[in-house]
Length: 192
Image (tube, rainbow, N blue to C red; front, side, top):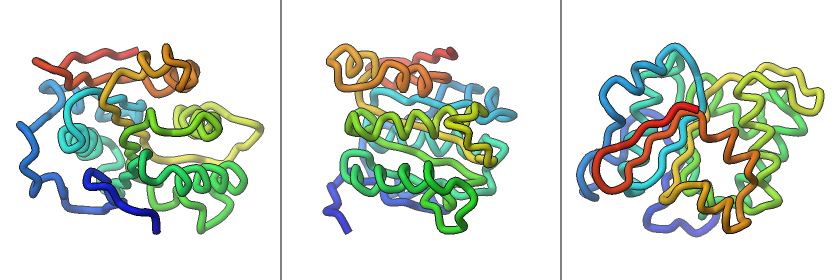
């Protein structure tokens, strides 16, 4: 497989590996935010904080979701760029028609993408198609059902990456539905 960075988040299921990491203070979404989203699968964007803090917030949204009994699948977009691109291409081509498509593991659960700004421009349209499909929009005539929730984390606001010309504004709009900002101080919430 690809080399693993120190902050790489493995695809996991079950226990919370962040519980054993002593990186900074614990980060949780503002009280009640994850619970207020309990009945829907709206895409969540977590910005700021540390890798561990973003992971904990993502897991909190997973635990509070209607799909909490399903798996929590975490992918580090900086480390797994090629694998993510291939997975998105296979998902686009096969959808749920294939029992082996790469996102099958995340169905009925949560797909968490860490460091989403590291997704190359050529892969961003594929992620946009997935994000729109998870929001219930038909993309390219594909009509297969698509279960699961998408949560993305990034160390800095995606609007900054958009302004640098490195991130698709439409993808930013699709990902920025419920926002948790873990920057310095108190978490700031935005629902768009």
